[in-house]
Length: 312
Image (tube, rainbow, N blue to C red; front, side, top):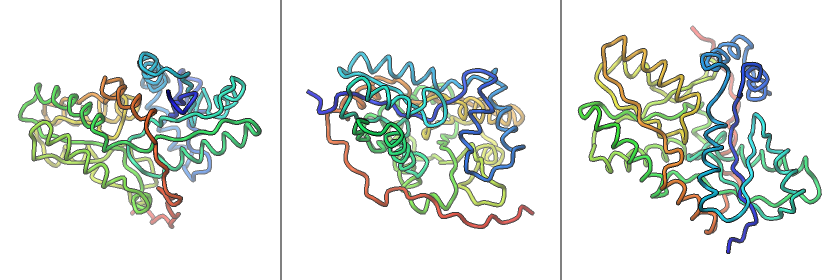
């Protein structure tokens, strides 16, 4: 029997209609020095899909699949859009939940993908106040064999379509200052190597996408589109850094990267994300029953803010 009386699926959130887009992006960017014109540029990505991000539907599908194997109640809360985490924690308290475990929809350790979610939980519990449930958290799981199995399966299917294509893994770019306080790049390289080995490929490349910072701030590179222009060869792109086909995958890969390949006359196949792969569902169910572990106090510390170099 589980030591927990509920599972909390904890995610980023996304808009579901046109009028949600700007309020959602204001939530995402609150406290960050991002010019409004950059926010409006990001909004166009969502308007390209009628203002609806697929991430919420994908989380609903994940919860539906988990209900087949998880025997405790499942709740869902987001960082940036409804259902907001504090509202979910309040509902959990009202339902009598006392000891929950959270599955965060982020496989790799970084401030934004790990510690910030722990801070989100702390703020939500503080907002709810007395009686708020204790919430343990499943740690980043990129090294788990089931995650590697699921991603390997997705990549193998895509390689069958373009057997000679260059195997390119992508993940969300983050500021270099954030990489200095987290295992993000190390974990990505380890997971990419494991998946590449699983499909029998020794030649692969890890690149990045979805950069959102000021031009003068150093972020992880190379960018996927820049790399495609450099190598000019057919490609199998595997978005290993994402658990579902949400906006960064649909726009930055299926729209922008594909446009580059079309311009260069290259074949491109984009591997699916792990989503509700049976291995992922099995992994989550197993992790609920095992000790989730405790991240150290200095886990994935916030990046130190540095002066931004002017863009030449």
